[in-house]
Length: 265
Image: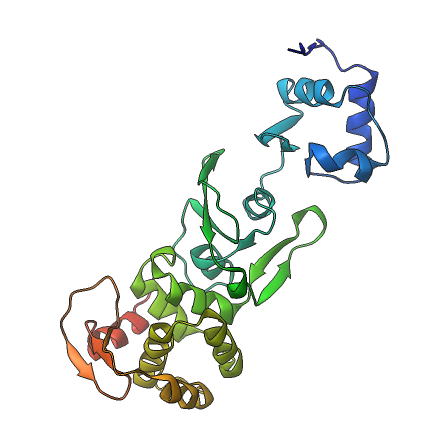
């Protein structure tokens, strides 16, 4: 077993490493890629990194992944923890300004299996989906603070697909009602998600609310509606009015839907 030597003060190699990540404006990195990025080879990279972690110049996110101890961008960190991470679901709703409800959990969509992780008070929840469901990604931020996030329409469709990650069904309905959506994008993303129940729920709520410029989506939805009745709220009771046109059972009443949308924070 190789022992790591911990120096009391910054030695020349540690100073050179800090100088280079300052020069290249590196805030978050992996051990595997940092030398090629800095265009410099260090004889004892592991020892340098461990010393800088001990001295709190760096913070170890997990094995082989580090960030500056002052770097606190949870969106960037969450996406960095998996190879194809995307900020999505409740976190994307909040960043798009569609909900004021704030969660200490950062939701990251990924095609990889990864356990949730707690870092500096933030829980990172990784939601695994099929690669075919990855779409509608928009870059947010600049430089070291850049990260991928689902666009507004994909965020809404994703939340209807997996509402347990949306911050609550009432929040999702309110978010859907409060924003202007591109009907064609909604169609495209529903085709990608390939969940008829999602299409029916969105169409039914849009119809009740008289959602503007949503006619193309309603026409599309009518062509894919099946004969099986679906609960509007998948976590609610099996009760309420049956809507034949959309094959939806309104376990949240029309009046409640309107009230949810009119509710002020």
